[in-house]
Image (cartoon, rainbow, N blue to C red; front, top):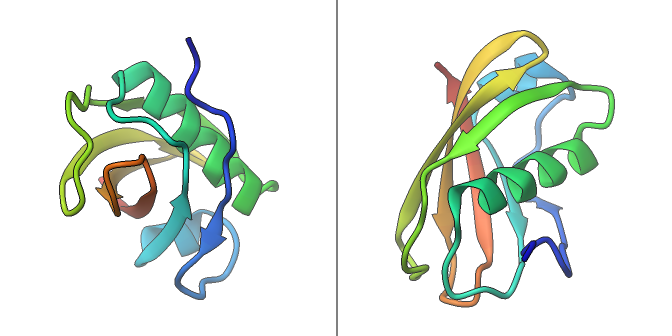
Length: 107
């Protein structure tokens, strides 16, 4: 079952659009309402959140680790390609309900 329902993406740091901006310190928040996350479901939500914030960018092959327990302060690692550049993403869990922020850095 997909856990992509009720997504709200908020930009929490100001950044220019495109892959160059994603190479800097960028963070987005989304709320998905789930106690745990399969890596494939999280990758779908991360991709959707980023596409909503940067519709002119391309996001390919984003994959994430499984997250057996979502807890405030925990993190999950993801990786993918943004506009042709390898990127590492850290999903920072904001609560146990599935709200997260995404930080991206060049791989």
